Length: 106
Image (cartoon, rainbow, N blue to C red; front, side, top):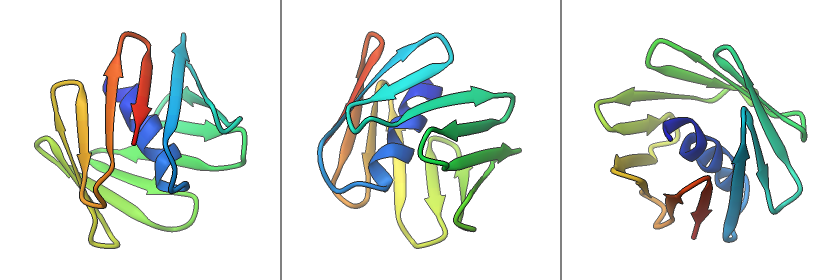
């Protein structure tokens, strides 16, 4: 579940609108047309985006990073996201909730 909500968080971070994503195996398909595949510690987006996890730090293709401490992820731009159960609450006011194999972010 963490993987899918993390993918949705990556997807919504690039967009300011509601986003829905569905997971099938190791592939996550989002309604903006972008698909994401995780291979090892790296997530690859069909839009050319990548994110690589090393320890508790995530490195993004744009040079930014985030660090996870407990259930909260701290982004280098000052934003945060906190995971509680199947819902991720982002400091920009958006939330992502997983039900089954689908994540919706608003």
